[in-house]
Image (cartoon, rainbow, N blue to C red):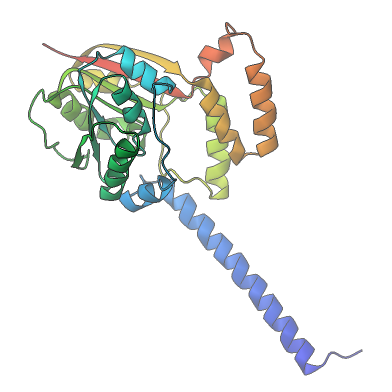
Length: 275
C-alpha cells in the first residue's frame, strides 16, 4: 500500500531527528574525549564541586589522617587546589591552622561557607594559579599539600610548580595523586575516556613523583599508597553491578591481605624542605 505524503514526510522527519541525535551524541563524546587531553578549567571544576556541603565535625578521611600525621596542632597548613575543602576542614577540627588556594573564586567562596557551616575558624583564601609564581613569601606556611591536583601536569611541567610549593613551605610539601598501580581506577578511567564520560580532564596517574620532588629541591622524599576502597568507586564507569560485587569481595579480604596495600587509589609523596 502506497504511503501518503504526510506519512512520507513524517518518516523523513523521524530519520532526520535520529540523525541529529546521533550527531549530538557523537559531538558530545568528541568534546569529552578532547577534554580528557587537557586539565579542566576553573568553571569545569566549580561545576564538579557544586554539591551541597555537609558540616565537618571530626578527622575521618584517610587523606586528612595522613596529613595530620605529618603535622602538629598549631601548624599552618596550605591546601593548594582545595576543591570542596572538606579535608582541610577535618584538619581544622584537629587544631591545624588552614589556608586555602584555588584558581576558582566560586570554589573558594564555597569553602568559606563550609567552614562557617562547620563552625570552624574561617581560613585565609587566595585566588591563584599553580602554574605561575605563588603570591606567598618564602617559608610562609609549615606545610603545603594537594590532593587530586598534580596529576593534571606532566613531570616537566610539575618541577617548577613543586619548586614554588617548596619555596613557600617551611618544613614539607605533600602531594596525593592517583596511583598508576590501582587497577580499578585505571579500568574505570579507561572506559569513561573511551565513552566520553570522564569528567576530570587530563589525569596522568603516577607510580612515583620522587624524581619531580628531588628536581624541585626537596629532600628525604618518601612515598606510599593509601585508600584502596576509593579506587573501587571508579568501577561505576564500567558497570555499577561490577562495582558493588568488587566492593563486597574486597571488603571480605583479611586486613593483612596484600591487595589492601598494593591497590591504594592514591600515591602520597612527601618531601622535606632542605635547610
